[in-house]
Amino acid sequence: MDVLLSMSVFRRIVEIESFSAVAREMGLSQPTVSKHVAALEQRLDAKLLNRSTRRMSLTDAGRSFYEPCSRIL
Image 1 (cartoon, rainbow, N blue to C red):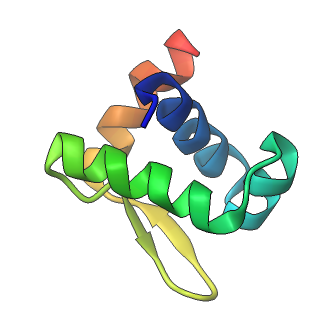
Image 2: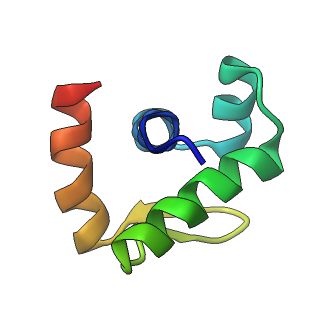
């Protein structure tokens, strides 16, 4: 997967707190958005988001990764 696109997807998820809204905004399917996050997590060997059907929150690793993403992208 395109790492920069995955980083952009992750950044928008953090900002608007919705996988579905990011999918609509970026013209992607919701499963594709999830795959971008999973690819980043695998690449970094760290969980970035705690997610359930009702809530999403950043892990410590996710918070550390988001800061440079928000400045770069």
